[in-house]
Amino acid sequence: MTATEREVLVKVPALTLGFWVIKILATTLGETGGDAVSMSMNLGYLVGTGIFMALFVAAVYLQIRETAFSPWLYWMTIIASTTVGTTLADFATRSIGIGYSGGSALLLVILLGSLYWWHRDLGRIDVSSISSRKAEIYYWMTIMSSQTLGTALGDWSADTAGLGYLGAAAIFGSLLAVVLVLHLMKRGSTTVLFWVAFVLTRPLGAVVGDFLDKPVAQGGLELSRFGATAVLLAAIVLLVLVLPQRAAEHSH
Image (cartoon, rainbow, N blue to C red; front, top):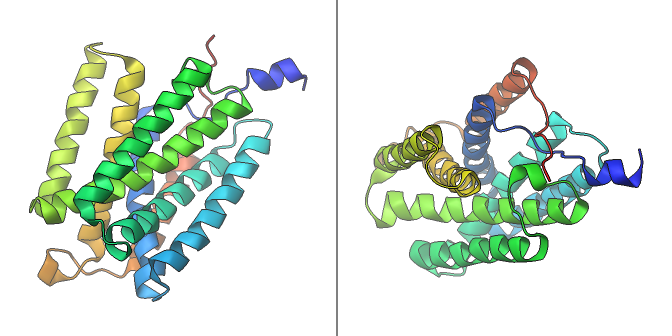
């Protein structure tokens, strides 16, 4: 493969319905998996963050070195980003003590900053333009920022705002439906709608994950975190096997 061919290679998936279904499952798994390590295994948020951050960095390294789109590697990296996002957000909001409101505000600024510098440096932040190593680095930095923000935002909605897990899930699900309608009606920037939808899937997955594993007294089902994580992982593996997986098309 020549240098020119490497420059135009897009190693992220096309935005299909299957992509969004797997993304929501992955964000839910990130919540149950992150809680399983930090809470059920009693390792704490800091140690859990260290473990998942190492996995995320390793996955991104492999993703960037890969010479072609690999569905398995891509979704492994996404899952790593959701788990580290869970423990990192919990560490910031609970261990450091800035709270869900402060954590959500801080992480929103970080996410917007990542998108701003990416656009300022490369001129585009849409999926079809992720065709260089620099763009990939920006992409994965933004992904991790959005996953971390989503965890804090989900917790804020369910707890601080008093919506509960199902109430918060209904809100985020409704917002995603609005984004879908705008997309179908071709209203607004496709790139903006993508990133809004990408961010919203994370708090949706976070509150659904909390609903599955939190105590009944807190409004959850109190299912095993390890069991829920295993089921979600199996569902993701099945969908990656069954649903067509293709890379997004490059556009100049």
